Structure formats: C-alpha cells, structure tokens
Image (cartoon, rainbow, N blue to C red; front, side, top):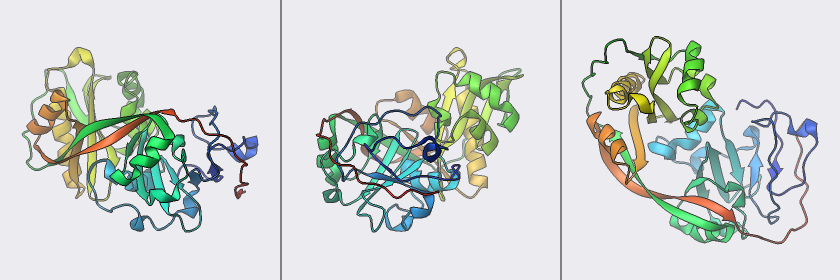
Length: 303
C-alpha cells in the first residue's frame, strides 16, 4: 500500500495521537461515531489473511476490488477481528465488498461503511439493515468485452492517445466535477501515471477520458467521462475502443459495469463490443442507526 505504516483502527474508537495517525489519506480526519465493540476493524497490510480464501481471483467488474487494492495500494482492508477473522471486507472509492459469516457481526458493526456502495451476498442483508436506516438497492449490469470495435476517426484537431504523467493537469481540469473516475487510483496524478487511461485531447485540453477503474488479474473494469460540451462527437467511443485494445494487449479482458437504467452507458458498451454477462444488485447505505456507546477495546498499535 501507499502508506508506510498503519495502525489497526477500531470503528468508534477515541482519536489516536498525531503520530499514530500519520499517513492517513486525505489529511483532515473525519470524526467517526461510536459503534459496538464487535465493529469491524481496519487491518494493516501485513495483517491480511490469505485473500484467496475470501475474494474470488480473476473476477470481472467490482468483484475484482480486492485485487485492485492489493495491486495499487489505494483502499482499505477490514475484518471482525485481526486473528482468524470470520468476516472480511475491502473498500475503495466508496465501494465495499463483504465476505464471510455475517453472524460474527454485532448490530451496527458495518456502520463505518456509511455512504458506500456495498456488494455482498443476501445473507448480509440483516447485518446491513441493523447498521443503516437507509439501504437502497441498485440494479447493476456487468458486461464483458467480446468483439473488437473498429477505431472511429476522431474529429479534426482531436488526438486520441494514452494518458501520460504530464497530462495530470488536463485530467484534473476535465474531471473537476467527476472525481469518482480517478478515486480508485488515489487521484488524477496517480491515474495519469498509471498508464491505464486513454484520452481525446484538443492540444492540451482533455475532452474525454476512458480508464481502468478496477484492475484485476484477469479483467479490467473500465470507466469513461466526456466533457458535457463535447458529447455526441464519438470521443467516448474512440477512447473506450483504444483502451479495450490496450487491455487485450496486457493479456486481460475488459469489463464494463453500469446501472440498469443508464441507457447511454449500455449503448456505449454495446457499440464498443461488450456483451451482457449478468445482472446483480448492490446497496447504497445511509443514515447509520444509533447504538449505545460501549467500552472501547485497546487495539494493537504498530510503530
């Protein structure tokens, strides 16, 4: 991970010293409400259990989130306990994958995932329901790239090419209102340096971007954003087609995830050679349920 040292954090614990909190992403710390003593804890990278026992290897879409976090260092790991965990989770950019036995969780134990999109088996519904007053199901579609799409010719004066580290300022400007697209990389500079993006540029101005959103070992889940003033010019199509070829050259398969009711995204997927693999539901969480405070366990502190 990017962080050189980490402390195991118990959700709802009292604030640590400045030294213990050094390295927390984002600078300013957000207050976390108290939760029961069996709330999930955050694990340091060297405390992770064997991930193969928890998360499916080589999965498409956001199911590859664990592989992405392990490869990029952007994200956080969680469990009901550090030794011999019974429930495990990985979170990144507002997405959460839950695995294991929900019976190991106390009521409200998942409240740390407020404002997240949670993907979990149906058996986790009671645990999620006890943690949140608002749990919104969101129907999703997972597409897998099957057919290479012809590379459309970009408009006059527009170049479609791989994003380079020097493109970070242009990427930042394009995504000023769409920071979600680079959140899984830790920011625009990290995405620009990753080599996993293709963009349509008019000189130094970025008009559209397609990038790997979740990078797994077998699949790369893609995302795309176009400046609203330059939509319907085929820029997204050109960027996604170029990125799909790049993903294939790396020996992986591109995947595409979108909401069931997002017709423009479905059409873009179809026109660039994706075909529907399956549908699923994830849940948006909100309004953490109130639970009485309990005595805090003292977590192990790493130097």
